Image (cartoon, rainbow, N blue to C red; front, side):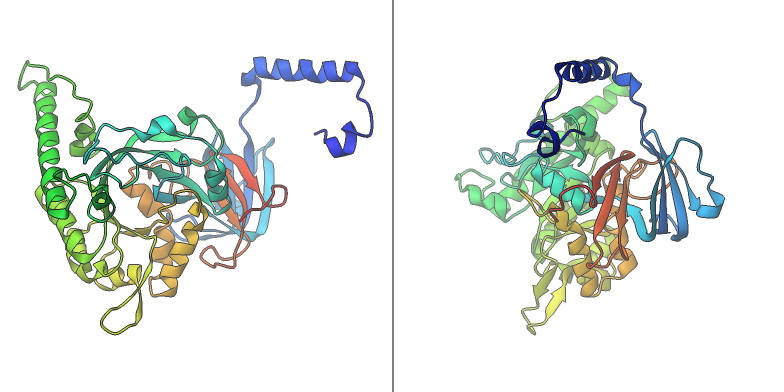
Length: 424
């Protein structure tokens, strides 16, 4: 590649060379199909698959953006034409999955006018490969759930997307990806004077909206299954409730403090039977984790992963507090807005530092959030047929001293610490 410092200011490039380069670029642009997807053989000293036991001295074959084969080196034959990425002294793991992020664009994800805006679609403002996403990649984060903020009691529709370069259409892997709810805290700041500005009002407004959405879903279900010939009218404010009540997408429920967590469990699990998760669940919310465990309700903990116990002044690990009381469906978030998405691994490591089992912390970064988002057929573990989202680290994967040295997303190298400017 021609660099200005090496060539341009020292020599004059003949016009014919410029013409040839221009023609070459023009032909390549006119024939994008000429570019074959990269094919790699990724070698690693240890492959942490999150789908079984780690593989020592392993190889991963990557073709067409997918994992073609994975196993011990002596059992995987590298076909001709595959470029070897040799990291035999390092560790390979799945790309990290963040189930609560606001960095799909930089700002503009709150609309605090009405208490509920169930038809608001955040997909329309995605800014692919913005600076925050570039930093996320350097932290090993390859998939995020990009969601509206919590300025509204019911804030709209999120999308699951990759952090790699590409158009919005290319990076989105699930749309709609979720319905975003915000319980207490942030929505109270609206102070509009409307019903729904306080906690009791929020609960009433949410129940009414959910009942309305449930009736809308049932009308469409009756029509689709032939119980009525009357086709319902499409209501864009209620359309999202069809996949929600079908169980096709989860509900993201911004909630914290034990009494708010209990209301979330009663409303979304007990009353409506929806697939959802407690998001944040911080402060002293872990005190009701036994109720969470009874329901096996997922919890996406963070960004606070420690809290001071008000009774004895001891620092407590929030995730460990849930785990100690029997909750197992646990993963973490950093609630990233303008930056910090790259710190997702730090959240899990800090949880481990305060008592969360290390293997559980690893799953809480990968396969568990992928299952919650219902995209575990594509991401969250290293298995044949899944997207080739692979992170190479120069030490044990849960050790904070280990750095990310290379990242593949959809089978393409999107970060190489040896060549790219390291910003994390």
